[in-house]
Image (cartoon, rainbow, N blue to C red; front, side, top):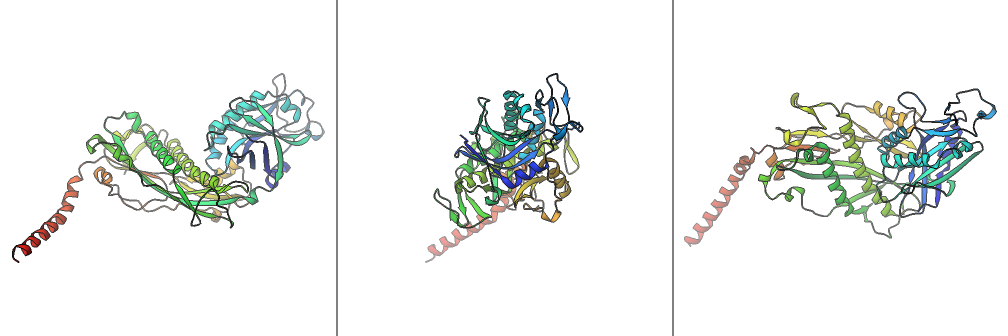
Length: 475
């Protein structure tokens, strides 16, 4: 249960100085909440942009239902004569969509943890608590925490009549709001960064008897990501070469390098009783760059937990981007159309040839106080697309220099897609692309080649046995 919230003084006061009393505002709270601590950290506030139609995401409405846009005029100090009767109206769906997009751009240890409102105190009091609870619930569903058991979020009200900050805790289950202590401090400058490169390769069998809906790109990829998530839960970690334990302390400043040690486990393909039962196989492999930020009072174990969460969240975000970008597109391979369906609709049962699909690559963008956010680039996109998204979603006002964007997942040249039998037997190219990628194989015609390759070996062994017997007999 959160009792105290600490806000970064530099960032929050900078935002406060830019707020206009003529325009109510709603936005997202970026910070850290944890079920293992009664203290929450607020790193930044990000205003929600205007809707697609150009309208505000938040405005004031009088009791008669009239919208008070306050674009000018008014009395001194920007106060309206109807302030005591107006209520805050928030476009909940639009704020939730903003939260969904922003959550994909945050690294481990940073999350969308609530909503802030910039409005007169009288207007907030005139607004039902249920309205704010509904907005916060929508945000929590659009941008869930990796620690899904935690059911509290924040509501920060910045009042300009009179000027003050008030923070409340929203219980998602009950929908009520309770007050908490809110303080300012230099939080961002005290964060420590942890980084790792996680390599993975798993084989996901497609059974001949499975239903078509279970072999879609989304379902098969989700199965692979969930499998990786379970594996990571049992992984040990080396921090700067030392095994992470509960009492391990940090003696140096970051960034800290982390290596995850995974237990040896049976591959997913062994779940099938025989090769005859498998219609095809999906190879899910790649290397993911992950990063997390740790507060001054948090343990190293929390940083490792957040780092593991960043890996899984990153893969899920890339899958979502692929499905969104491919909506309505026709799947083709080497300019030969192989289906009249989109990638979202196609099942792997319908693929007659091997097919390779690369996930978007991750890049890092400098944000504030030495902290980075991330973006995902499709093959056809450039850093200019990244700059535009950061400006729109994160509200970065400073110019982002191209050479400041870190391309930490470089693209490796295309690998040759293997046949189904080669994938089953583990004869897959060891070169990883530094991003998640999916290879499919359902060609069963390559097995004879493996026997031909082994024939010289058998002949050599047979000759050695015959020579040995001859020596024994003629002694």
